[in-house]
Length: 380
Image (tube, rainbow, N blue to C red):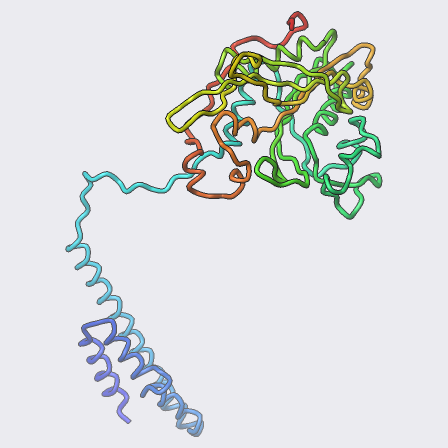
């Protein structure tokens, strides 16, 4: 067989191919499983050693030459197609760029930034802690006895395995364990460990789900420890915070006696609201005296003076130090401020909802309490 003539014919046919499909057809004809050159390679096994030594190099050289010719022709055709496309297409650089899809800042993240700014202006630091807690930090150190309903399985997500020191592990039910951890750390770091002013925002978990409750939600808790602290300081702090957050000067608070294991005395805080009529009907807006006609009171948060047992668990001497604490749902604050009516939508991941209620990354919070840090001279 004249391998040189076969090679010349194959290379000539490949060079004459005018489309990538034609090149591919020639590749199959020559190098496919049933191709002519593949058939020559299969004959090597039946040859003697002398015949294989003579014919083998020529057949392999033929295959390499055809392979190189195919690659060169394919590259040339692709290059020509690209040149033709570049010559035919034009880009008008004066046109505006196509709009790229943009994400948004979730309302919860935005509200947390707003809270951090307001309380930073009041002299508070932001503290964080683990979301997987042990029952001592989550319950015992906060003066919750073993029989307390909050420890029940239907309220708390427990882990099957025990943690350090044999303590039960759970998903924290509030951010109050952060207060305990911060108190213990501060008490060890400096004599007395005070004054201490922190807020503790973060995710918490409880077994509950409806339009206003979800198994995972967000809370922010505040803690102040100093000498001479009383309920007047608590009311002033909350009133200043709520006026800055809702950007209204007519916020009125009402404190009602209540009970929480970790505070004594404990108070529920109600905020006055008024009915505002708009084009889409009327809605309740915070602000105004709740006892006035057409107004009312809305329960917003729980608070109180830190229980002496909690102070002791945190490493403080109750005879020297006093403090107050409060807690409120971040998601509920967002619902009240931005007019949302279903908490479950916060976690559905609906792009339409996020596009409507989300914030631009450039929309930085500019809220400010406009006052100095809390002092023991503040009155009710």
